[in-house]
Image (tube, rainbow over all chains, first blue to last red; front, side):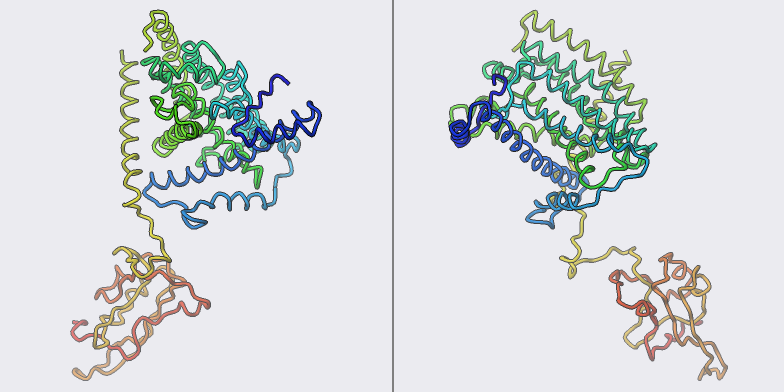
Length: 359
Length: 158
């Protein structure tokens, strides 16, 4: 089982894996460990998604001079847990003329593609489930599978609003996928590798990539954040579920837990976009200026999560500041501004690397 | 080169917007406008223009300004106000004149449009900031605004 480099975060998990290997034949043990890690990731990110929802609600409240949820649990910490429990216990309703199979399949497409992308992220030096040499490519591929789920949801709902929302989502993802891909490619020019752990290693000595590549890196970062926000279908690019025009867009006909999957997937996608940005621009789990590099017990996960939360906050800041774009404005932004700039930026980055102007 | 100046202007205006909301974000902890109602029930003060219900203020001698002219009753678009009046002999002039008996106000029907208050020639009825109007029986929402035994203040009708 070469491809499962089940790298274990702590000694306790090493003990567990040794124990599993001691009681089972090797193949069965490695499959068991895979299942255990999958379940652990599933549970971890379901809870993380819930708390991102809570964070979004709190941040939104503070941007609007409100207080936000503070009744359920201390400081409202159990609010989204209660919401999730409510959604689990609700009846799953649907209309008669839906395409049943696709309708039921769609939410799993969205949530599974979101969770699959989590597997390749290096949360710390050892905490990485699946370190493949085409990591960045894998991430781009996986993150665009999610839109199939949205298209299926809109199509199978047999609802005009859902279909319009889904079609807008397809249009948006096809357009902005280019910008995401090209801005990542700009950074890959600098690192020369697609493997996420090696991208981080490249930043250990030379500083974060956003500093190494200075001007083209900063342009690439700005383009990536704009395109990434569009990729996750969040405001100001939330044409997909524009409440004032389309009801709830592609998930109009969904209820209960299936709706919750779409909702959760949006927040996990936000986490993914921020994580890609952290790995590619801000040095992943590396501490700033290596301040905690020699402290053995200090968790590297801390720096990773701090940086990710910072970028998530930036995306929330976008959401609660900017009004929604029209469809033509959305396409103008991508095809007339972001894409030409991105192509120029790649040439600029190539020149910078060719002439050794990197810091 | 309006292409690049457009980009510059776009980024600049976006950053202006973000600085505004960022300022709100920082000040939100102190300046939150949310009222946490049941907790601050004692200190909660409704703002001046709040329309809770129509009341008729009385002074210390249990006298009010209402002459029973029925302007409010006519102005009310859905009949929330009924005035019951009778005639009594004025002791000074010895003439019979109109006198208010009951000013009946159906809060359950009132749409808080404020036309009665605008119509009142003597400013006898005003808005009160009370909003805790839930009751177990809707008949409790039919109120008599003038207190029992009250009389109109002298000199109002002139």
